[in-house]
Length: 91
Image 1: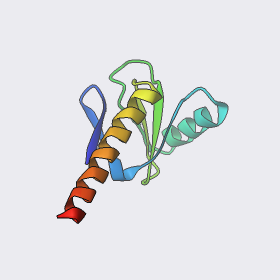
Image 2 (image 1 turned 90 degrees about the vertical axis):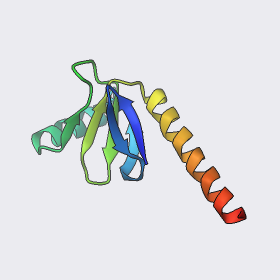
Image 3 (image 1 turned 30 degrees about the vertical axis):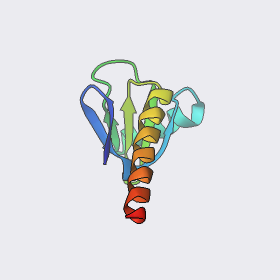
Image 4 (image 1 turned 135 degrees about the horizontal axis):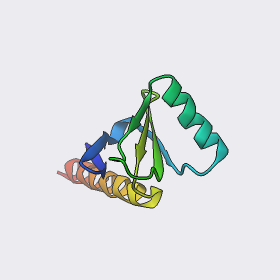
């Protein structure tokens, strides 16, 4: 399953480790290290990066969506998956 992170960009739900803001010093440092090592994916379409998504592959994906918006989409999809599993188990 994939979640939209803005501007026709998507990430695989099962690959997401954490979704966080970019306003802390550790987050900015992590972003810089990812950029220097070629693991930074800028999915902002030229807009200001407002959230950072850390992936299992150690890639860092930047999104112009606020953290709350990305988390809301992530949570909505996870709830749908949980409901689907429950429906399957009850059948």
